[in-house]
Image (cartoon, rainbow over all chains, first blue to last red; front, side, top):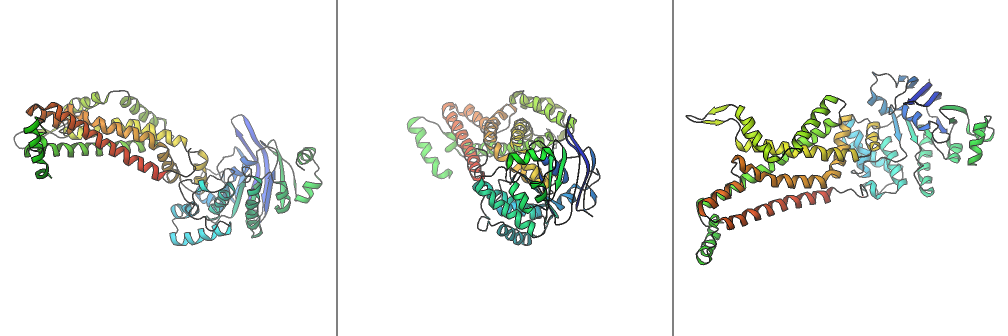
Length: 242
Length: 248
């Protein structure tokens, strides 16, 4: 059974139909990249997976649980699904360490000492040892983004969503964030990434989906999609990038 | 303290005619201390009440229920758009007329004293402004920050309590300082419903002793000192809570 299963999903904002029948499956431990031009519905799609956006038609299940079920315990879903945003969205009034500790301590009511140990280990894992007591305002974009990744990991999710996490970063800091994600993927974390980093998608992804105007145009293993794209739209998109 | 200053002011009176009787006459001195105490209590309680109303009102304004939002809106319109002096008179003489009297053994006293009415009226008056101040602070917190909290399993109340409100409070502080300072000064209006606070007390002193200029100076200095302390305290708080690289 796939960990995340998306079937014929439709989503509109008012009259604007953003997703028009999207289906994709993600198996445990798989790394999936979603690429495509701006406005193709990539971000909307992954935001639907943890219930930040609702859908009008179709079905999304995480570990067999229907996300669109009105009776669904959203908190239980979100515990399983971590998300990292383009703009980091750290809590600016908390230090890096506090940002990572806050949800497990306040929401899951886990013992503080245990959480702190785990949080420090996670901060070390994203290579930010020594920055524990620094406020987000004093961290670079790349450092903030890695704190945001550690913050999501602190909830011990089963799948991580990355919504254009390097889009707001300068090229120098992009590398350090991508390295962190790569290590996560290597450890077997299931990852769904919306990204414009084609080189990275090619290197890390098990499967790449190309979306345009709310539909999946083409998908396949990265080597295949990047070198022998069949659809004309995919070819045009890729030719503009490489 | 009294024994220390009394001879000085007594001499001042004898030699120059400046009559600061509250500093050398024991009876007037005690009256003066009571005035200080009542004024400070009035300021403290009305500020606290206005803050509670502000936080709750702003929270209600983020609610889905149109009815609840409408009630808070009506409250703001009513109390922001009428003079505090009229509100005090309305509460004390208007509503006060309908509150029960308590038998104090021979004579009757209203269940709610003029002091309590003053706290209620001033707290409600200041609260109307605080709701608007906190609301503007809440609206200035990026939606994405609250969304991050939600995706970390925070419930909507937890998001408000741990993320939105702490940030909104910081953003609101300069405007809040203005309003609380203004509220502290407005407490002097409680004079009109005979709350024995500073203005009322000194008015009685100068009526008894015909030393209007001297008591005016004391009254003026009293508010300068108290209000400066409140403003300075809030300013320190603002500095301590300032976020590095946020909101500027």
